[in-house]
Image (cartoon, rainbow, N blue to C red; front, side):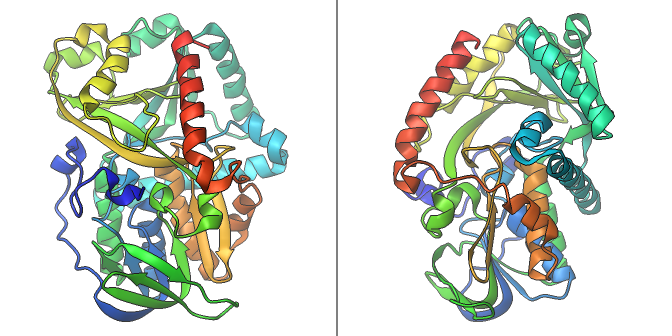
Length: 436
């Protein structure tokens, strides 16, 4: 199944609140005929757009190919949370790679947040500070307090505030959680406008941006310096370098990456404007996520709608009733909102890896790929584009640091990803329901 076209109307944004409230950006023409560029980029989300921007500003000619519209995929559909750190906590990273590498990875994640804030500011996209983590058990809260202390003492990060039951419920009026923490150095924003804002900057820098130009195959150069050719139905790009930035939508374009990166679907709804009732959800303009494996995440829009993500499916097809799928976890947290109308519902495809660390690879001599952000992609995907742009320019130190932790393939590779998804989501969904 080609996820690019399985659940969406070709060339159209999904029926999301983000698409409805996006900043205007004229459509870009499809690629037709042959063209040449220093770098061909496959995918028009945060990763590809960031790479295009940084390369164009460095004087490289760029041809970016997007199958639908810029920001069409996970970059334009996500929860809008710009989180701190990597997807794994520093304890896990230290066990995996040692303290020195863990510190370097933390610093890279801080660089990612700073990059998002800088690009958002340049593009005129408001950034709202504050992301809370909601805990379901006292054991989770005890671990969090230890983690907060470690980040402050060993990593120089003192922006996270522990909140006991009373303090957390003053912030988040729900009986679903026993405590929480608030990361003042993280934040949230309009995710599609961030993507479109970076696209606008890349276009101004001279990058060639092509929409409705799905890549059908890539003929990689077989030696360093040999050109590659990227094909679409109506054209082709001859380039010295290829950057793969399609994440969960990569499909079979690159089997070495596909074996390590599993696409999964997630779903979001938006309510009608809540007015004064918004204080029943959050008392400050922050974003929230909880500790479930199938995570719930939410925030308020500028017009006081609740934007809430949650619910899982074990097929690649979106459910017929996304509203019902997401309403259930929403009401488990906020039962008092049972009478509130849901006005928007949409799904999207992200990608995970076995270790939850990004898959950072050179799948061919002149090809770079980063994907598999595992739900932590707003900041890391934006940084990934910059890292690959730097690697093209011969500055690959940070790219290589992350490449050392590239996850192993899923057992059976790409062919068995779907059965693994079914088994894994069923098991972890059961754990969430049992409160484990």
